[in-house]
Image (cartoon, rainbow, N blue to C red; front, side, top):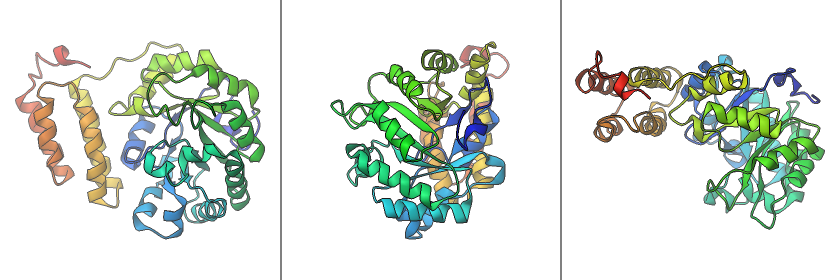
Length: 338
């Protein structure tokens, strides 16, 4: 496997990536996913403008610890010069293992500024951005793309080749267009076509919700790596299930309610320990609380209490109280497993 990122793809091994996700892939969650088997993680995606303006909130998104490596920082923007300057600053201040360029985000407010998947409307701009970033950092550069901006422009192979030719050493494809958003099915055949067309590693992304899905994507597409996004929400254990599936081992069951809450508590403690902004940490954690408690007995009432908590200590107290008062831990856990 060619390129400076080849160390992530030893022969016969398919690495698992946690996708960069705003308000989700913060340090506490990255650590949980690493514990369950994610090989590579990423920061939340950040704007080049925010980086260059010294926005404190943006800078907080870039902070990581040495034990989270290997890790990328993902940046987005539409101005090639600013993207280059932002990558240089990120390199000097934070030294991630590689820099990833976001050409995939479909969110309206980002696309409106021609960022994320908005760039896919002009592949010359895509090339200029990549070349500028590559010139501005000694770190490897990767790109996260969609299959096109809309159906008429759907052409992931051409987009991927333009990325590769501009210096991208890895291409991650979410096999939907921007106008697809997250609807319908990801077209895994496009990941297969891109894998065949490129010399650099291709990482597949889209519709991996179960461990078995990771194995299916690998077998269907031949991709070098697999990125998991929404499938990780409230389920960091999907990485251990995906690894087992890829290795041909029995896939572990989902954790029962007690174990799920232990994981949730560990996530809360990570928030207290590793986030520098307690308010942001708690705000981000509320998303995860909704996912962790989905489908459990009395979950709606519990969530309403948890969302009003003002500290991680209160969250931990409410979770422990729930276990003590709602679940019959000696007889009921098996009935509520998964």
